[in-house]
Length: 512
Length: 117
Image (cartoon, rainbow over all chains, first blue to last red; front, side, top):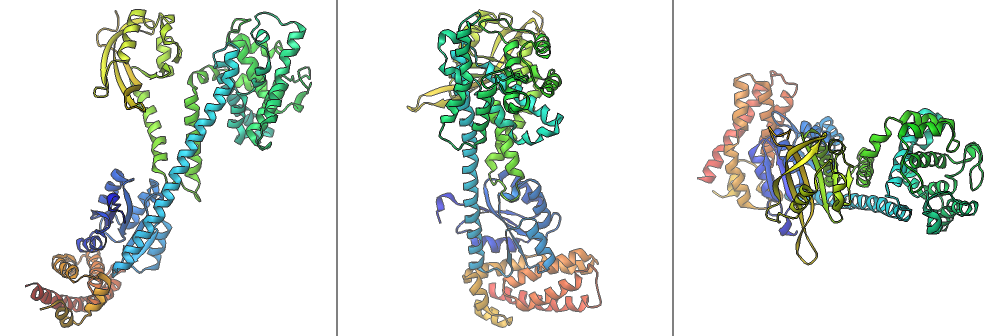
């Protein structure tokens, strides 16, 4: 056995002699931690869940006995990660059965036999180790894949957006509206309940609705003002072109993402009354995915500024849709739009691509952790999920404005409440022009703050700066506390990669 | 007195223990620890104070410890006492069963002291 990474074994027994006996048989190969009762064992487990490779647990102890330790281990999910071998001279079949039921892996009876103890311990550890490594690998790959998928789809969709001279917010919005409408739809109309498991896929597919525009010449795509009939005919081809592009993807055709993306690309300009294009489908002939995205597309087009129009306010846009001024839609979907009206603006603020990855990830986590036949053995997986929740919770309690500064690409991100207080968007990417938001900070202060992000060093990653910010419309002298995260480039040079900050008004100086 | 002499004089088999625990010095060390093990004292106290839970648990522990060290007879006697006490009540049998444990335990402890002296 490799002595450089000695595994730790926790021996829980109230009798000193018993602990020593077991330790004596195992200490040549393992690091031994001893606990003299259930309570002590649980405290140790709380601290070192990931460190311990195996527990040898006595059944009968004063205070919390072996059964109780097993119960708590079940409650905390530890039982899936750390094998427990029961030790006892107990021969009552009921107790042994219950212990197995509670997740004990194996049983060692007294009197101890060196060969039996060592072999059983070694085999159990090997088995669990293998399983743990595999689960960790799977968890990492799921996260990586989810991230890559979302990233690729975002990149692909942004290509079209940027060519269109748009910010990329459009596809974000389509994604959000589609998600929200579908969630409402399945609750409202039982014939659509079957869509529930596909909501995420359809929303993701929705971001690809305009990929066919890649084949439309710039002159038409970015033409301000009205199209000639000829130009409009060319423009209309983007629907079918998108579908053709997807059709050529050499992938299984029944792949749900691909299937939905195809429907959406091809039919998101069809109309409920049959007067849309390219196929003139009518009513329920139009797949529901395309119907929803079509409505989302129209809503967002109305409420956003375009090269040929100003943004309509939310209420006006909804009214126009109801009055069939911008197409004709399934009445159930119009009801859904009415229902989600109030939620839409806040959903826009909440959403980011990172957020999407996180939520996909926690969804996968939720599913796998509930799967009794294939429980996740990975502590890492759970830890990430817990840390997110913890972080969100503490952030929500903080009295002040929380932000995140990314160095490459440079970007400033706020929580929705903070952005609201400062009267700025949640994400500011064009940092050199932050003067665009004069309400938030003046140019001089802004340059000063920016410079501070580049001060600090790997040895001094936290510091405070003073600056004036405009909070709720009032010029406020603030203390900004910053924590930098440094990393090393491939050639070993330290660089800051991100910074987290909290801005708080300085006491007694709120009004200035 | 050798370890072999010790096991002979208490009527148990060193070979059995050696088969399981492999090293003589290990066994000797545990015999020393056996002197400090509080199980028997607890058992005695349990009887003296009419504390059935304490008596039961101590009997149960003693059974395990004894079997580990190859004290077959003491382990069996403790086992009989454990089962007698398992319903958590002293019976007419409890006292006589305890006496057996007491005698066996006394003999073993005397011999360990001689061995380690």
